[in-house]
Every structure is written in structure tokens, then in C-alpha cells.
Image 1 (cartoon, rainbow, N blue to C red):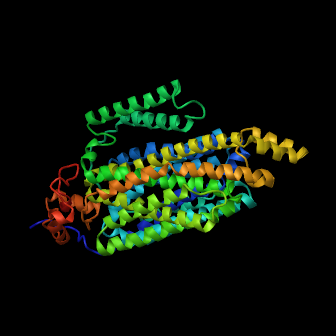
Image 2 (spheres, rainbow, N blue to C red; image 1 turned 180 degrees about the vertical axis):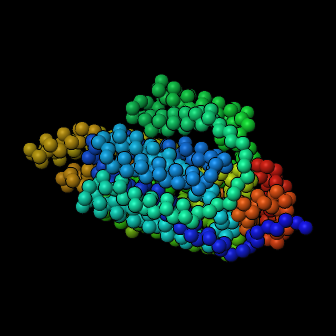
Image 3 (cartoon, rainbow, N blue to C red; image 1 turned 90 degrees about the vertical axis):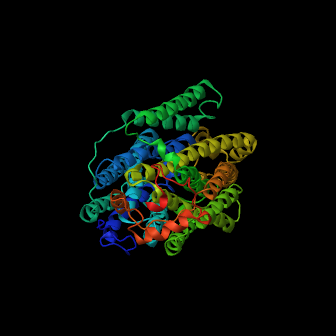
Amino acid sequence: MSPSLPTPAAPARRGVLPALIGLLLGMFVSMLAATVVSTSLPVIIHDLGGDQAAFTWVVTATLLTTAISTPIWGKLADLFDRKLLIQIAISVFVLATAAAGFSQDTTMLIACRAVQGVGAGGLAALSQVIMADIISPRERGRYMGLFGAVMAVATIGGPLLGGVITDTLDWRWNFFIALPFAIAALVIQQRTLHLPDRPARRVRIDYLGIVLLSSAVSLLLIWVTNAGDAYAWWSPQTALMAGGALVAAVLFVLVELRSADPLVPLTLFRNRTFTLAVIASVATGIAMFGTSVFLSQYMQMARGATPTEAGVMTIPMIGGLLIASVTVGALITRHGHWKPYLIGGSLLLVAGSATLSTIEYDTNFALVSLYMFLLGAGVGTTMQNLVLIVQNTARPDEMGVASSGVTFFRSLGGTVGVSVMGATLASSAASLVADRRAEIATALTALGADGVEVAEQLQSGTLPQVSALPESLSVIFEDVYATSIAHAFLIALPVAVLSLIAIALLPNLPLTRMTTNERRQAAEADLATVSVSEGMDALAPTARADAGGTPDDTDSGGHRHAGQ
């Protein structure tokens, strides 16, 4: 008799919802701590005496360490207790966030945000891996409403709450707001998150791979962030940093090819689904991180909004993300088809990126809202579902590195995108201010004695608080920053087009109804398809040419996808 396997088609499994609550609360903590300061950053940087480069680095530091740590957390998830790891990640994230509230200058703030990113990388990677442990890819859409609600509350409520705190209390309280939620998340996870036992295996940590990956990503992002400002794009510094990043990347590949237990198994790229999903994730990262950061700056510096108002004004983007995420998730679960929705989402990314690159300081806000909605809907459709289809084809023993691989490249794309967009914005703004120097001088002269104090603030290099400037000057700077931010948004457009092409080429494979543990049990029993009724249903269409399956559609271990 064949071993008894769990029924893959079973509805919501017993204990899934309580476990999801703890997992969702952990994700809420990380999102709230990140979004609550988004509308306050212009005020924070101004109060700490920072410039546009500091503004960019406060954001980039978190994204940098998130990108570096994500594959490391993913690898650890394949080696150690995932429940303990996610609790450690929450603790690191929240403690670093609280420390950021005591920052005395931008250097300390950037350092705290960097540590914060280490915890964020763990939450981003581990939440996806644990989801695969308790919910199958086909069933996951039925729970998307919960994830959509968490994303909406954190992403809409965070900026609004941060704006109110900044306007009524002090911006430092933004960094303490996540503490009670973090404590609740840790308690709930400890009591409700019960993951299946995993087979014991010998632990090998690829320390050299970690060092080389960290070096390559750090050098690349430091170069991109400072090039064109601290030094020219073609300069000795560029040669050292870009060259060093390239050398470290090549060495990383060589080490991973020779390592017995690599940090990022390069065999993953034999899986066409994984490779194309990675390419598509880069555009999603740029759209998600870059636009959310600079849209808030656009509202405050190009439209004269307060932090609270800026939070309200970005609701259309979050509304698009929420509606698309919930609706598409439900449709995927009901019908089992995912590819048409991802193609539609990538088209929305292209449309949103293109339209946002045309905004000016006086663009009708109804149009700006439509542009934000389009971009948000594109992100909501593609972000989670790209991880979903990779988990659908990844080997159970590589679920951690496969899931974190997509998340890593999304974070890397977002980090590079924010760096390049920030450098473009700073360069464009400086050039436009120089072009309008005569107008600025005339406006300052008309202010009389008050003009001297304003001139000193503008010449200090500190990011100006546009809403506090006299009207004759605020109009000039609103126009300058609107034009500069529109130029920055234009960078996301070609990458969004590349994402559309990658998604169109993805193999259209059916979603399995088995969780990671069930697939592992099936593989061990060598009954991955023949003893599971749903697997038998999936086998026929996968073998037909009209279902998108070809003899080449195998995973990194050489297994047919229908049999997983």
C-alpha cells in the first residue's frame, strides 16, 4: 500500500488562520515601521540638517541591507527553525527602528535604518517561505484578502499616522509606534505558529559567498548613489567602485559554482520560471520602492502639502494596490489561471510609469490620482504572484532560497532604482535651480531683510522645506522639484517594459494544491502525481502543447512541474 498523503484539495486547513494572524502581524509591524516615516522624511531630513543625498541614503540604506540579507535569511530558512528565525527578524527590525528615534544627525539615522533593513530582509524572505509551508499555491488566493487588508492598513494608515504625529507631536515618535505591535506579533507567533518538522541535515554556511555578495551589492549601490554628485560618472572613483563590484560579483559566481552548499544555488537559473520571474521582479521593485518614496516628496515639495496631506494624497496608489491584490488573488484561486492577470499587471506598470513621468507642479490632481492608481494596481497584481509561481515550481528543499531569490532581486531593483532616481533628481534639481538663479535672486531681493535669512537656508545645502518658503520662492521650487521628480520617474519606464516581456515569456504552468511539506512527503514516497487526484488532473494539460508546458519546463532538479 502506498503511504497516506494529505489531501491537497482540502479547504482551509485547521490552524492555518491563527498561524496566519501572527505572520500577518509581523508583516504589519515591518510595513508600519517603514511607511510611518515616509511622509515625514522631508521634515526629518530638514531638522537633522541633511541634504538630498542624505534623503536618498536614509531610504537606500534600508533597501541595501534588505537586499543583501534577504538571500542569507532564505538560505538560513532551509537550514534552521523558521519560526525562531522570523522572531529574531522581528526583534532586530523593531529594536533598530526604536533606536532610529533617538537619532541626532543623518549619519546615526542612516546607520539605524541599515540595521533595520537586516530585520526587514528576514521578514520579507521568511514570511513567503512560511506561507508555502502552510498554504498551497492554488489555495493562497483565498487568503489574499487578509494580506490586502494588512497592506492597505499599514500603507495607508502608516503615512497618515506619521503625518499626524509629525504635525502634532514630534517626528521621533514615528519610530516608536511599532513596538506594541511587535510584542503582540511575537506572542501570537509563539502560541499559534506550529510548522511541520523538517528533516535533519548537515549545516554548512557559505560565509565566503555572504562576504562577496555583500561587497558586490554594497559597492554597486554606493557608486550609483554618489555618482554624478560626489564624483563624476566617469572618474577614478567610478572605476574603483564599479570595477570592485564587478570583480566581487564574478568571484561570487565562481564560489557558488564550487560550494557544496551555496548561498544562492545557481542551478535555480536553469528553471525558466525562476529566471524570468527574477527579471520581472526588478521592475516591480523599482515601481514599489522608488515611486512610493518620491511620490511623497512630490506631494510636499512640488505641491506644498504637509506630511499629513501627503499621506492622504497618495491613497489612490494604495487603493489600486489593494483592489488589484485582493481581486486577482481571488480570481486565481477560483479559476486556476495566473498568466493573463500578470500580463495585465505588467501593462499597468508600464502605463503608470509612463504617465507619472509627465507630472508637473500644477497637473490636475485627478490625473495624478489616476496615474498613481494605475501604478498601484500593477504592483498589486505582480508583486506577490511572481513569488507564488516560483514557489509553485521550486523544489521543496530549495523553497527558502528560491522564494528569497525573487524577493532579493525585487529589493535590489528597488534599491538601485531609488539610488538612480535620487541621483537623477538631485542632479536635475541642481541644474534647474542654477538656470533660475536670476529669478530666485529677484524674489529674495523683494523680501528685503527677510530675504537674507531665507538665502542662508537655501545656500546651506539642506533640503528646503518648500511649504514654509514665501510664495514668490515656493512657486519656483515647486516647479523645479516637480520637473526633477518627473525625470526620475522616467527611469522606471524601460524596466517596466522589460518586465512585460519577461512575464509574457513565463511558462503557463498549473498551480499545485500541495503545501511544501506535502510535496516533500510525496517526493519521498515517489508518488508526486499518481497518488494525488489533483496531480493527475494537472498532468494531462501540462503535457499538452496548448497548456504552455514543454519538455524543457523542468525545475532546477530536473523534475516535471506537474509532479511536484
